[in-house]
Amino acid sequence: MAIRKIREIGDPILTKVCKPVKEVTPRITELIDDMFDTMYDANGVGHAAPQVGILKRIVVIDCGDEEEQPIVLINPEMLETRGEQCGLEGCLSVPGKSGEVRRPAYAKVKAYNEDMEEFIIEGEDLLARALCHELDHLDGHMYTELVEGPLMTSEEAAELMEKREMEKAAQEETGEE
Ligand code: NI
Image (tube, rainbow, N blue to C red; front, side, top):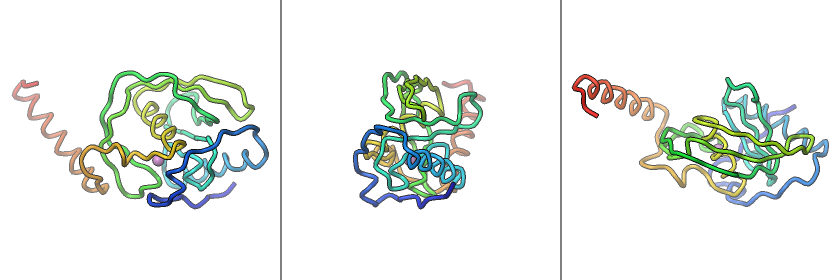
């Protein structure tokens, strides 16, 4: 159990395509444990192996409240996406920043667990967003490529959300769409 150094945007390792895992060795188990430690320490909801400098197709996710979480996904593969959601997204490799990203509202992923047993996971809302975001990391892609509008600091993002809430409330008062 250890907290590893998180690679940040600009580090070329984050642009590389990761290799599939053939076997869950003790080193892989240790890596997965460390990825959880590193993610929880940084208050993240998802983490991909390249973010700690390892080019393997491993993702961990913990969005909190759902039963099957935390989740380990080895060699994950996107099977299906549906719908659309637009919302703020951040990444442990882009500290202190967030931006608006359009993602599917639903995602269905096939992956292997730590016993190399195949399973299917379906997610909506935050889990769908996390699945898309983390799987992108395994192919060297970051959410910053998809951001609509500026990358914001947490203060700017909070201001924007407050403005949206006020606009929404004003619209509701006047009965407009
Ligand atoms: Ni990320």
